[in-house]
Amino acid sequence: MAILDIDRNVVVVRIIYDGPPFSGKTTSVYQLSNVLGHNNEVYTPEELSGRTLYFDWMEYIGGLFQDRKIACQVVSVPGQISLKERRDFLIQTADVVVFVVDASNEDVETTQIYLNDLLEIIAQQGEEATKVVIQANKQDVPGALSSDKLYALFADIPDIQILETTATAGKGLREAFVVAVRLAIQRIENLMEQGKLIEGTPEVSSGKDLLVQLQQHIKTESLALSLEETNDSPVPEINETQATPPVAEATVPPNLPCTEVARQWIWPPVTANDVLERLTTHNLRSTLMNNVWIIQGNYYWRCFSKTAWLFDSDDKAKSALRQQIKIHLQCSPFLSEKRCIIVSEEGFQNKRLWQVTPVFPSLDALLTQALQRSSVEVLTHDLLKCAAYYIDAYQQMTQYGVDIVSNLEYFGLNTQGQINYLGCIDNKNATRGPLTDELLIDGLQQAFAERIKTTPSSISTTDIQYALKRFYDKEEGLAAETLAQLF
View (cartoon, rainbow, N blue to C red):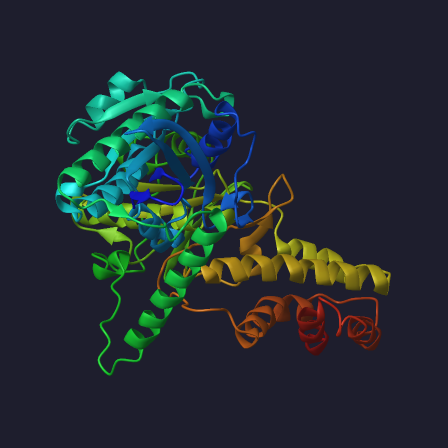
């Protein structure tokens, strides 16, 4: 990325802020802009539920290199696994990467996954490989990992530098940034010595320029994927969690989770430990439905385990756990923060993977309540609200390419009034490409038909259909027309 901009007489470097979700990348860039006197002059093209979808951009010009000012393009990448393609593209343009770690989070497994992805990209760069700075963030949280403990964790990375920060308060951000700039300048010096430093006008001089470049890359990659999928002999995608057949009969009830589960077999550690203790205070019983074992843990928790999630070795179970962590991180905007994964003992050597999710008031309960309204206006309003919640969640989950059950019992409203998916998830039958109206209508019909059919209403179906037809030409048109057909 480094380039000598002759027209502006500056040397341009790019500093990328990378790291797992919720580690503080965006907060670091915004607070850094304040620390450097730019007062929130950050460009963020688009967000979803407060999460970065493309990048956060800031330019800072300061310092000197051989009588030229240094123009730093500071860019944070999206953390969602579903946006890995965008993240990888941006990292490949970096002169230095600031890897932001949530030092208060004991989920070392996720940090290692993201760091390994970063190191794989850097390993392909040869002699001019991008340098990495570790930013140990959230030091204000009691029990946060210190830089000394993190040095032991990242011992395999040569010449690594770790700096402690509290991004929300702006503490340590300037120091970490200065180290990053210093490493970027060292890279420039190496390029100059080898005669490889590019001179000219940068292709990207603003956040808007970078957005255009990134969107063009996304279109190119999507076209390549489409061409690949039309090949006469496509290579099937392998799901790690499906690669190993079950080692026991599907009808044999599984062992239930217990509190004595090693730390390496739960994710995230703190949440999972708390959930295990709550679960095991109640009598648990498993039922088998559509090759999925389901445990209803009192009124507040539900556990899922597919019959195929039984593994005859630690390596296979560990691989499945990692795959599930990736899927959960990918879908995190629409999953409860209290959701967790547990791998429990099953027999002498086997291990079973469980997904555990809290239970919130479901859309099925809201729909039942709506159908019992005595006013057609209120009934119609509540029906469309339920449909809107469902469509929003269904669109997003399908966009992330995961397999979900379109059962209204598995869509619920959390305590903040946000929709969460509360069912079993996997990447089997992952949907690619945009969600069509036909697929959405089919999903609505499957989810709503049974409840509408079995819940009697005091209002005539003709009146309900007429009320819904008034919304045909509005924003709720697709949902209104589909619901009207179900009555």
